[in-house]
Length: 440
Image (cartoon, rainbow, N blue to C red; front, side, top):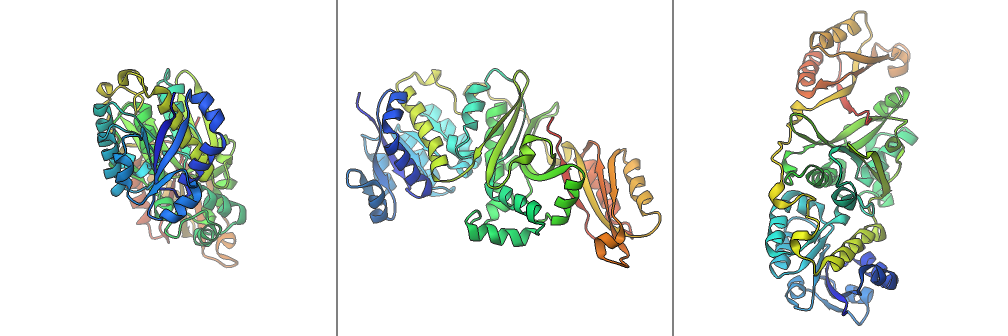
């Protein structure tokens, strides 16, 4: 049987890794796929550099549409990124009857519903394992391995840049700005790290996992997104003293009212495995009704880890290339005509518990005022930590930190109480609020 022919759009870090791993492991991959898989055509603006990577036997062009128009190409790998030209090229490849493999989480999180509908109508596959958590096969686990389960919730460390920054802040007691500069110097953070540090990248990924887990359309615009730029070393230290670590989590959860879809810093108990995921590593916890808790851990980015996921998709498509489209695993795990209309909840309706840090005047009655407001709102307290004034501001200080852990309460109710607390004359700075996730 002649090899499956693949066209590659973009041969940067992941593209070159994909080409190299496919070359290195070609015999093993052929044994698993049932036939050879060859990248026979590459499109890249820097033709000379691309040709130096793939050698003389692979055709290199500077026009991606030439790859799509080639009738010999069976699968198109899109590694350009972004929402713009990548969207047009993916839709054109689908229209030309090509299967598509992509690592483009931003594209699928925003335009996935349109892209998957086009692919279903044309009877081709769009595979995207590399779009979430790099080399960790979490998409395959959700679409296939856990298909017997009613998924209850997913919580993931799915951005390596932010996890590296938080790990360094905890280890070295440094503030965010200092660690960000170091992360950029070491290559863990981009020159413009906005998508990472503001939580957007993680939100793209958890949007895709939510759609697969719960059979809902891809709805990135409904996600609540909060990054790590406001976190201080002080909060990381206090969390540690209370038995928690702070992680940026992507969370999606099934509730009686609808689906939660959110990204934000969270206090996680130090004893949880996911709380001990350090550096640029990724991890995803999935809770299913039958299987219980499962954890997936590994490298969330990098040339060959991401290439591992791209090639796994190539093998899947090669195995299923000739299968009846109706009997393939659906793009989002559920059959297209069986999607759920469960609503994504606004953040104000999410119920969770909280860590609050208040910089207050070191005077009698302040604690009673604050706890009185919480009591009036029906919010019960789990723990209180009050620092000595000289620990916070030095000898003779007239300010201190008051740290409160609450039990579960609706976010909208907490917002109301925070506004009342902030208005107290004894509260001297903006209140820090971090959500707490027990993940049990």
